[in-house]
Image 1 (cartoon, rainbow, N blue to C red):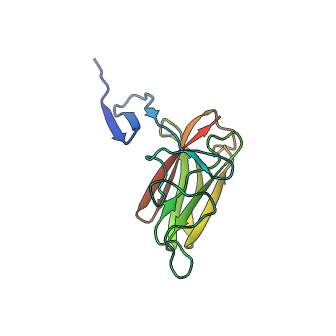
Image 2: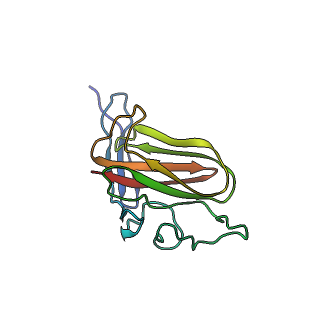
Image 3: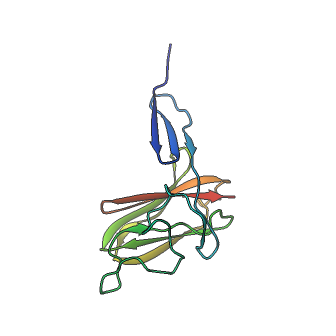
Amino acid sequence: MSFAIYTLITTFNLIILLDCSDKPTKSVLFADITVTDEFGNVLSWDPSDWCVPGPRPLLSGVTAEPQSPLGLPTAYYMYPAYPNPTKDSVTILYALPTDSKVKLWIINRYGQDIITLTNEFETAGYKSVVWHLQDSNFRRVGSDIYRAIIEAGQFICNGDIKVE
């Protein structure tokens, strides 16, 4: 007789059910998304998504969060991807207050790595990366919800992207 051991992880309105047994089974991911237009304007906000200053994000291109006298951000941020939902590509903006080793990658709803968008040492400042909805083998991903994850220094943040 065999049985599966499951771990339930809940964060805000995110629920992940992970199978901790030796047999491969699918995990389940439920999440809302932050909806943005092609200019980065937030149309609806999921507070468990992204890591931005204030209670909700600002419009793209607006840098009203605290800055140093040199114009650099004073904290790490990851802004909502735009447009979201998307059909062709999505832009992810982030801020680095200091030079940092940055890894930004995309996973699917089962926690499998899809593609690493950046994994290098970067200088402080405001940065962006475009995901063209391809996996690491240059194949177009299917319609689903994906998660962008960034690690920079001790900063870790994630946000959901809906691909149509």
